[in-house]
Image 1: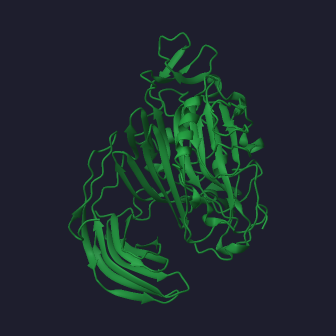
Image 2 (image 1 turned 90 degrees about the horizontal axis):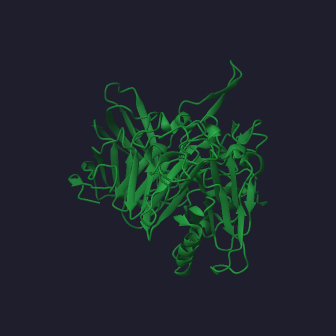
Image 3 (image 1 turned 180 degrees about the vertical axis):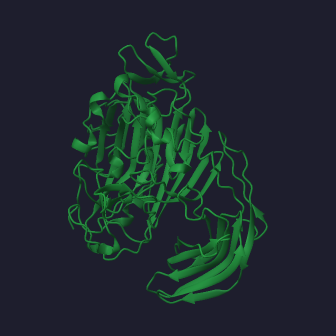
Length: 552
């Protein structure tokens, strides 16, 4: 099967102009060191407890009925184990209108021991299907495998865990690094701040050449500063749901870019993301949301002193638009398409750097997956603020010799929608976006293939005249919540201009098979970033063998 490396990778690659406790008597606590309630408490109430073990033949299902009022309880827990892949369904209705019934599917992987599956019913987002007081009707479990399954459902409980209406960006901070994940955008990595560098501030400002700049040690009285913007700077671009640092996956199902045939049980939709002409977009689970900012469904999350964990059902990027036959044009789809997939992240800070563990599993049950073409995955899609305009990567022949500074240094890249820059040789497995003083953001990601990079609005990448769209961003309006608002129209994390790099692997998606990888993010001067990444490499601190799960 031919491998395909498109110059243009994905919907994320182009700026969208739309833009375990005792059952029944338990409590959970999570805490965060910044900007969130310190303690979160909730209690599980058991609706079903059993010691029964049962079997399910291939495609056989078993239903457990309840008919219990769970008003105020949107968080559920299953204790169970299964020898096979299971498709589950929670069925519930509106207490005030029992004819309004919702069937919400979920997925359980095989395990030889009891697992704890927890989920928010779909009431975490404005377009959720469960935005009402509920009566739980039933749970159904179906064997997806060809072999007989042995299953034990030990307990089913519901809890009064709150769905936050405001504090939807959660943070951890350790030392001089502060990071945040946006629960309103699928738990994507949405905030990255170096709060200081050896006691000096990291600031955003306008210099006397009218350029938007970010650098160390600049304050309102500095000679370089014409207009001071902020001393608390988010280094990740969050202009829309396709930005941030996030997971993005593809499967070449449903036809081709030119013809949507409905193959593999999937129907492609038309998308203009790749340019004015558009094409039929492939299956593309995107963590943050789709091309018109329909947001992904939070399944579960946890915040501790040095951990943010999130689990989401991703949106399908190209399913945010539909053709209106009566008024020939493309219209936004109200809710888009929530995929049958799970994306998980674990964010931790270690040795002054951010470690991001990623996991994805698809459970659509697409057919004939062995016959599809391979497609690129963005691992991850990384969007850095535009003042860090220099793309840098080591391309010498003496890897990890810190005295050898043979760099691929790109001071100006084309717009990725037109001519993405592809770097196929990166023997040290890192890239960075830095300012003219070599301060910036670096990413270490062993196991990737090409690095695909570019910018948006490259001809006006720095000047203040062409970077005044911060207040127009959906993140600064509809999805701001407790995020820090832009301090000016030039706040670079909100504007359309951005730097973009996606490390790539080219594989064929496998159903019910998890794919995982880890990357490390550093904020420092280039020499220090490289030295710190070498320390990780020397102790094999990142094992990305999980990237081979879909090899063919």
